[in-house]
Length: 203
Image (cartoon, rainbow, N blue to C red; front, side):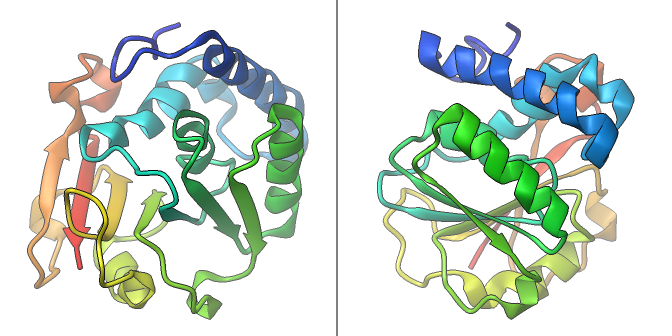
């Protein structure tokens, strides 16, 4: 599997969960249309490895709370929850059928550290250590919508904030706060990541 040895050494239990995750998506994707049909063929690159690229920025600590905003098919929240089993992940999506699907994944993979929320993110008042997301909207909109949901006190080696997977260009980002961009292709030598970035906005 391509995801192994890229960021951390995965054990057999983790590897098996990623294999099961692909099988579940392949089975249900035609019914629910969670990810593009073509990306099933490159599932480990487009969805698993891409989600885990966040580990380039941070390794989540035990007992920290992470919100996956607009989780869709469970990315990046589910892959990260498999790696960081002592971190609590909250996966939110406004579309009920997607949350029902995520609940099937949680049950099948026996994930004890994942909680689902069927709601719009602007209705959530709870605060988190980090908010992660991919392709939800423009970075500026994500920042102004979600900065209220970040805890002020940080327990990690970097400040709490928003970590966003996107292909958005730096010149199109108007956020006044300082932010940092990591070009994923630096660590993952694959053309899929040519324009893919991790944007980290500390609060």
